[in-house]
Length: 114
Image 1 (cartoon, rainbow, N blue to C red):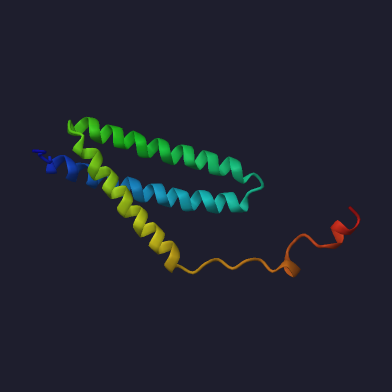
Image 2 (image 1 turned 90 degrees about the horizontal axis):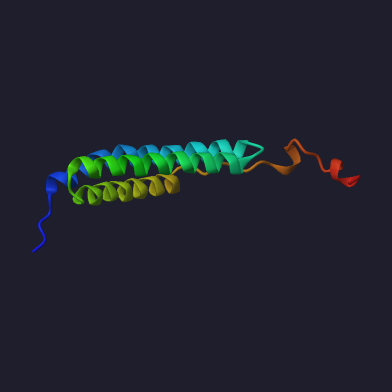
């Protein structure tokens, strides 16, 4: 019979929820910076590295301090719930409008000579 250490699950969940929220806030921030940048790949790589490092580092610390592998189950549950909320929030929120080609900074006349 498998015994669940509910204290460890709750500990993992309570640390996982704010760290997961920070992960998705960082994702949104990184995407905004990448879309405004001349080098979006650099922003996306740096953002993903930082977000993944923090997420895995805190997960490791929570699991090590709880002394039970059940803490990672609560941590993962919190991440999936935060992901669900982030996806639903992104779908519900108003999508950004796209730029009108006639009012963009680059004019078509620049490309006629090329």
